[in-house]
Image (tube, rainbow, N blue to C red; front, side, top):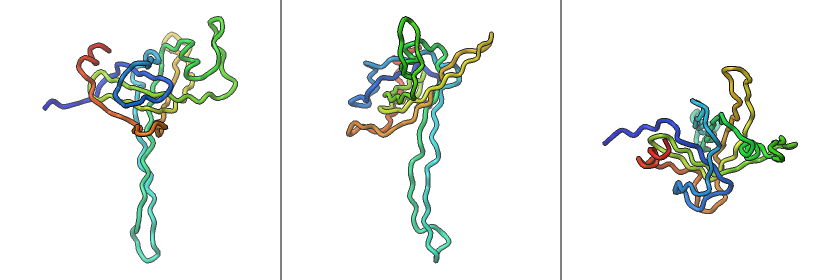
Amino acid sequence: MATLVTLGLSKILGKVGEPTALNFTETGYTAFGLTYEDTCKMSQEDPEVTEFYAEEEDDPVETVEKQGKITFSFSIMNPDLPVLKRLFGGEIASDVWSYPDAVNTVEESIIILPKKGLKFQVPRMKLVAKINGEFSKKGLLLIEVTGTVMKPTTSGLKKMAVGKVSASTASVSS
């Protein structure tokens, strides 16, 4: 059996609203743009463990565990006006995006497709974006996005699905 490793990134897709099933169907999903090299990361915090002790015992008599938060982060290197509006809110008029007066809450369903290995679908992710621009010969304007996996509101959906990237998906996305 071949060793399964997950490498590279083909695309990051998102859409407003939760899917009806976690089957990696891309219909209705759109890309955020090009992802800056080496910025797409996934991490999970350590679980939170609460220990309960009795006066008569040195070791815990009970523990309760809570899963650690899962986050994805990436930077968009070619943002356009619709992507700025999508991630920050605000308005576009006459080819000018106006930054919003208040914080805009953004939740989307996300699909992350690597070049090979395992792909990820999150039906509900809270996205927080910030602008990080370097105006120089070697710098870029980046939109740094951090997404937190949230509990889906659709009954029966799990918070994340993981599947294998098919050979046809990998070759089409390259």
